[in-house]
Length: 240
Ligand SMILES: Nc1nc2c(c(=O)[nH]1)N[C@H]1C(S)=C(S)[C@@H](COP(=O)(O)O)O[C@H]1N2
Ligand SMILES: [Mo]
Image (cartoon, rainbow, N blue to C red; front, side, top):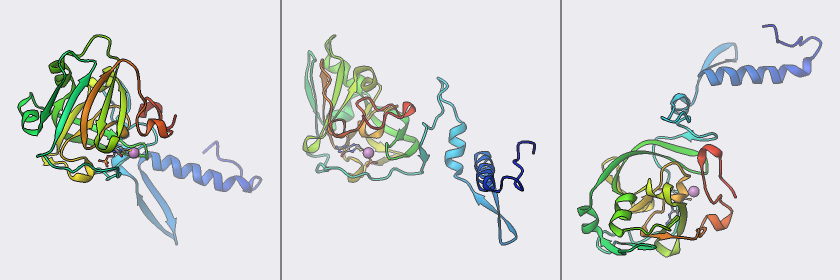
């Protein structure tokens, strides 16, 4: 190869060169390493590599920069609610003409949605292609007759957790009680959690209790603790 340095003259460049070749072949997917005389194939991270090549309809890579694809959600903790369908209530309120509250049975009587939504955790993992069932935020907004001057949505959860999103981005979300056909487990927000696509996963409130439409933005739990106010994974808006 022509750009290979002359290692007799520049021995200090050898390590960097080897590393570069390694990274190039890793990007191509297959890595062979000489180990004690034998060529050993090192299995790359196929899930991440394959998904990286996929494009969303608007041309963005399906996997945002700096993310690694994993097969299942990781429980990331938080101050849990009681997880029970019997006590579940969701309040839809704020800048709306018809505020209302639904229990679990009433939530199931609203028009239901089933959507494939990728999630991206700020700590660096993504889970792609989960099939989430629930009710679209847009459905709840319509039922509540959101006022024209509402600009943001605050998702409210058990024990005071909140997260703020722009109105249009929140309206693209849902409240969900089922992932891949199974009820949510307690650590993932049972019985119902928020789910906001295209923003880091902390914008998806577990153990949801309310959706509040507001005129003024109000940074939430993580947003007031150093996380980015907007949280676009493709712009790596991780920290504020
Ligand atoms: N109510 C509530 N929702 C929450 C959180 C929380 O602490 N409390 N943590 C957020 C963060 S930081 C992440 S990464 C995701 C994690 O969801 P998971 O535990 O289902 O993976 O939930 C988000 N929703
Ligand atoms: Mo997180």
